Length: 313
Image 1: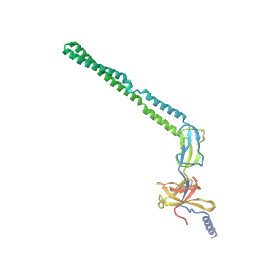
Image 2: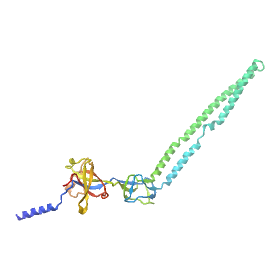
Image 3: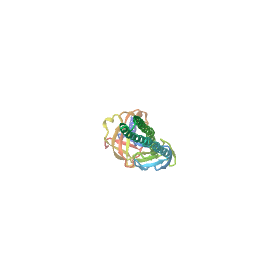
Image 4: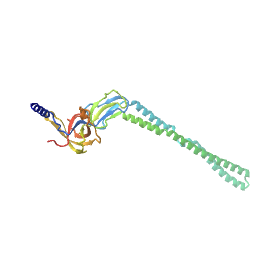
């Protein structure tokens, strides 16, 4: 009888010393971390990133040496400018032919006047028929020459335009090359993509950078997500948009509480995280949730936190 009393007393003492969970879920705070990487190869000429610094989206924070690419672009632009000097104006090419045509037309007009005068002389028996035939023959030759010259003029214009189109067809591809080179030049400037706090810095001014090499890590920690886990039994009691309370340990003062909102509930279950050491607890299926919490400066990424779905009495 005494042994039974001692066993019961020990059990009661053990239960009294074992704390009970007075929270509904627990987890760690996290944020969307962005790793900014180099987008160009070259020496890091300037760099203005310090861990803990606040950066705004669009801030220029560094410059990679892109002198070689700039020279390539200048060479391409010079090639584009040279195309214009290779082209020829149709008027310049056809000027000689046009002057020849004017002379022939002037000669034709003169022969037409001469034929009229000769016809009158023939009627007056002051000129022979052969003289009139010779003039008509000359007129016919001039008319044929004019037709050939006009055709040559059109052909020269067509050939010049064709040649110019062939030369200028090289302009569009060269402009695309120049645009690509300009894009590479732009990527030499390091622009901060998101507003936030620099969490880690991986680069120093003067170092050689390659495409894809991480430079720094940044995250917006004005608000953090407490990623916690709940059981299937708790799932029907919560929903996205629900207001909850998040809290962190505040030492001797107990807990520091924050208003939070459930922003995400996993659509499928998973095994309990391996941070839970007992085999039985790891075998349980749980659902991940995220609680958005406004950061007052005390919350840190990776910090442990607890979630209360309802106020505890």
